[in-house]
Structures are given as C-alpha cells and as structure tokens.
Amino acid sequence: MTQLLFRDDPYLKACEATVVAVHGDAIELDRTVFYPMGGGQAGDTGKIGDWRVLDTRKGEGDGVLHVLEPGASPRVGDKLPMQLDWQRRHRLMRLHTALHLLCAAVKAPVTGGRIQADKAHLDFDIEMERLVKEAIEARLAECVQQAVETKILWVSDAELDARPELVKTMSVAPPRGEGRVRLLEIPGVDLQACGGTHVARTDEIGALRVAKIRSEGKRNKRVTLELVD
Ligand SMILES: [Zn+2]
Image (cartoon, rainbow, N blue to C red; front, side, top):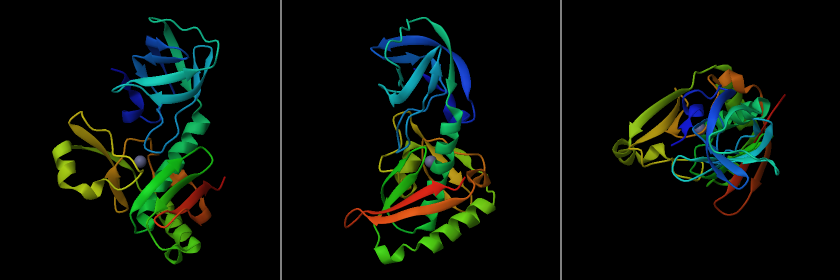
C-alpha cells in the first residue's frame, strides 16, 4: 500500500520515501506526493533522487508508478527524496478546481474531461447555442472572486449509491473499494465525487478565459479553459 500524501495535503511538494518495487523504468514507493494520472487529471512530474520523473501512473490497487528517465537505477530499499514540479502541479490544481466551477456554470450532463498544465476542458451533452462564452466567463469570474474555501468530505459507498447525482463528471467513476468515497465540495457552487487535487480557495485559481467552444459530436460540446497569467 502506498500512502497517498496528496489526498490529505495537495500542497505537499516534497517528502522522503522508500522504494518498495521496481518495474522496469517505473518505481513504487511506500508513500508519495505524486498524483497518478486519473479522473482526467495529468500525472505529476518532478524528481526522485537525482532522476527525473517523466510521468506518474496508477499501479495495482493503491499503487503509484513513478516513471523515471531512461537509465535510472533505483533499488528496492533505497530511501530517496522526492520533489514535485510544483509550478506545473499548481497549474493543474488551479485548472482542475476551475473545471468544478465550469461544471456549476453549465447546467448539463458532463460526458468527459481532461486537465493538462496549459488548458483543461469538459464535454457537455448540450446544444451549442446554450454555450455562451461571455456568460460562462462571467460566472467563473464571480466564483473566483467569491474566494470560496474548497472542502474534502468522505461518504460511504452506500451513501454514494443513494445519491447518484454526486457522480457527475470527469468521465470516470471515483475510486471505490475502500468502503468510502472522497467528495470535493465548493460550498454554494459544486459538490461531487472527486479524487483529484484542488486549490484551497477559489480565488487562488486566478483569472480564467474560455479559450474555445467546439462541437466534438452530437453529445459532446467541448468547453476549453485557460488560465490568464
Ligand atoms: Zn476535482
């Protein structure tokens, strides 16, 4: 079992950890600050020891595979410092949280989504004419300005089954099997199951722009956001 430190503290940028398994270029450690690609959010990059981490992926169970640069030679039992590429991760956190605001700004079922360091999108099952760039940007700006604190809640699998409306986005079901599921609440704005990393307050997202609204098919109207830096 890998201890997923980012779940309780997404602001943790570094830690020390012990290698517990080596699979070719990828290693598992007893704990990690690296978020593995999932729920539409890109995997983290950074450094472990002197090696660059090119990507982070899910392993079996709660396992996390840190994909190291070619030529790395870690061994089981090595105790190594790990450090995130924090600038990139923080942009992912800002854009991820922005998608929760977008989800609230557009009242329609979400059919997919993706968060990268430079942009993020959600796909909606909605008519194109109901997606108005200026209106969406105004609603997002309002939520950012309100500086609402984000909160992590946990509910049991049974509670989640009783409230299916909590599973509404990111194209994948939240991680199950531990008997409990993580929710992200932005009070007054959004509440849904989510295992990703978020900023503590909506004003930390900063200014957003709707970069593109495009049809990707009958049930997929894609709204792409960018940070205005
Ligand atoms: Zn989320």
